[in-house]
Length: 394
Image (tube, rainbow, N blue to C red):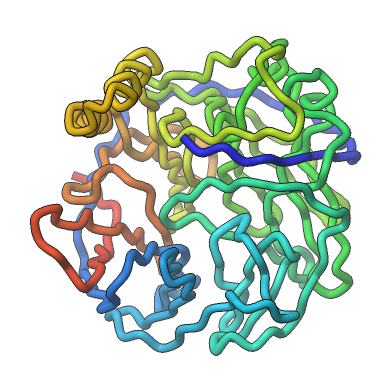
């Protein structure tokens, strides 16, 4: 569990209407992950796959220990590498989201110092400042989750999460009433428009208080459609995007095995300016489109009572017992991908995570999914293996 401080505020109201449909499959098709290829990124550190470009020819990594941003080709050859840790005008500061590809030859990096565009060699192409000054902030880190981009009527936009300061905090109703999840950023003008509230009927409007990891957004933009989930709320929202905001079109209730919906807390337990992130929170972690399928990558969450038990062992100094218990709890958590037909959003099935990946999240690009192999705990490795996989019918 990590704690950070933040202030969030939003002012945009989006009027929307919804058509609800249920997750039903009369004759579910059966899919499985098929290994197509693999690559080894030879890099000594702890690189994490952040993004894959649209045609699947370039991969983007971020290495936290060295703060290096790395791009490779589809067979693992490193092509570019740079970092921006110095106190210079092109330093993005603490990352609010992991880097993502923007177009064919640029990267979008969203940090405390603003939204930056760099070429692949690390030369700054554009800096877009935050519309308001920020307080301290935190971020969730998932493999294959980065700043999204979208093209609307021939114009390019980015879709980072909204981190504007608010005159409220999660202990107050106003926070939930004014919350907006994303910014729609006009690259040309630098203007940012907040969008995606907690819609009517959302669990986050039930009078309880929630931590940031409970509602961290998962999203995928395709043409003028936005597929969106508020983290641990098992509802898929489909919006129509335009340059001025978003209109809610469809809501689909998600049936996820053993999904532990965040219970929330009494709001009196929250302190202003304090943000908490729990890596064991149940959530839809990412959303992908592969060919004619919509994929929702889910993590059903760690049992809070058993997590407290493991934490108690740690506090007692029984670190090995606590570590073993956490590993056992993590292994028992259902993880996988819900699959829908993109054309009509009909439910296709539930696909387990591939072996040797630990059920962690993944990237997509070029019509494939890209998974990181779990490192061997007994062997020191100086490379990261990435599996290139596709969904096939059994």
